[in-house]
Length: 295
Image (cartoon, rainbow, N blue to C red; front, side):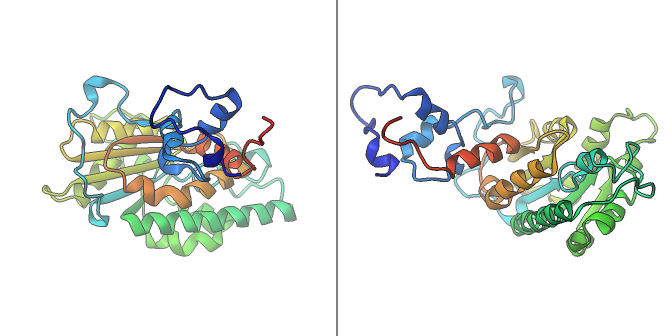
């Protein structure tokens, strides 16, 4: 029996108090990203913890809905990706001794095992799917606070199969471009903010709606995105937050979720922040058998 057959209809009549175990599953994903057979009212209950407005401060939130009913077009969509711990599993490479803590890749003290290489190839395949899906939604730019050429060098060394896609994208070192500008604050958030702002101004004409997405693990991306999208007319900001200091398996789960959902996220007509790590973890619950009748 399906979940929808076993649950009461709450479209009319008194409110239904849902059992705790069921509530736990209903919280598993926002309504757009429910992955199993769940009726609409359940999706509404699940709206959630994991997909919520980008603007937490009411003073910075737009007074009216950002877009009308027409979804953002490809020409209106700009997607930023961080590199370290978003596409490249940098923290994991440091932990297993492949990269030293100063992020030098020419002083290896260990080599990857066969199983680690297999798992890394799995991540590369998912990165390819995520980036291709993003490219089908709009322009994709990699913006990193790492040094110049770090992205290309580490991709060539650890993810060579991803290199053709990386070469087709613009890669920006925010640190190199903005760290030493006179009169500028030398903080990672400020580097990202300036890099985002420059790319946005280059991509959008004045009359276009702006649908700007940022994918990254650090607060820098989130804060920079808010800085460049809040208060801008006809502008959506969507922050997709990855987990900090992830294991390789964490990135595999997160990209498994994101590569299948980024088109839906990009198509939303409002500003959002999505906890990709939480959604990815909860997806494992949703794809497991639903509650038995005895629970």
